[in-house]
Length: 475
Ligand code: 6PG
Image (cartoon, rainbow, N blue to C red; front, side, top):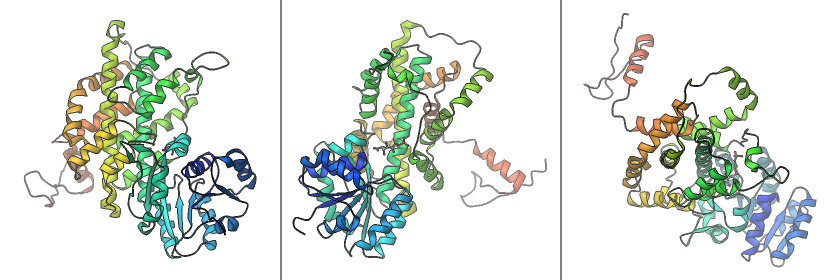
């Protein structure tokens, strides 16, 4: 075949289509295939003039249109569809060909598929892609992992289309097996926490401070120029400006408060539990989506369950201080959420032997992805100062920030509790902070109880670790 394609994309839903356009706009000859040929036709009709595309109506035609070793990116729904697609694709490939999965696949699936394809002398990569539709088109954050022999071959392609931050591409080799998708999963766990924390700030401003949507939007916009600067806060400020075309009301006020989820946040929490990494704030964000999704149940509970009797109103002249305290609570909680996410990254070394470079990952997330924020530059610096950093909160910059912000943080969480305004992720972050820094936990009592009812034994503080004791409690 003359002028074979540099890259092939399977799946032309919006992410796949935009990624194909991104490759083509960087001068790569791009082959495209979709299970429903009508979609390929529509894609070519709409975007065919943007670059050099080669559309195929069958998978074998698609495979034949690619330069060897073939480089194929799957942009299809995670789960069974990926296995089904591989089932058809793999028999058409030759040793040395490279298959990349750019979907939000569960890292354990990627690990399994990598082994299956390696047995056929094919290279498999799980490529975490973040940035939504816009990112896919103009520069996503890319987290490739898997068979490292394939990395030098696909590196020029992937780095060309990635976002850039501080002049560097937001794309770097993550590690073997499912490491790329593992890191994308943790990204999404953090994304859930970030979004939940912002939503809690919104709820507090609306229900406790009594601000209207326009004023709330202004608060978020103001914050988006400070330490909290980042994509999510940026779009949040903008969201409050959008009005419903029918009623003229701020559209956000008309949206049903029942959040959806596709499961990546849950995977993060399940993995954290499996690996014994405490990620309470990330998990609270998932639990809160579950709780909030049950609108009917909340409406029933609202009729049945009492809040505090007397709530001290907040005086309007204090609004400035209250909003500043809330900003502190948001920032400090965010630090805790990221500390939890990065601990989960480090745990991958213990569990899988993947040495994930936290500083480089912070750089990949600095641009292109949903959680991109100025703050990730500070995280990068923290890991540059100490690549072995045990917990992000222990770095001087973040330690000082937490110390500085904690008064406002405590005030906000306490006021939320006293006024009956739910701040679950902020409160969980504060408890995480306080329990992490507590030299003496109360869990000596738990050990005593376990030994009392189940002879589970305990260690003593005045004896070497590992020496086991049992008491006949005789109550
Ligand atoms: C990204 C997003 C992206 C997607 C999430 C949304 O990094 O670009 O995380 O992957 O928007 O899957 O997840 P939920 O539907 O679970 O909120």
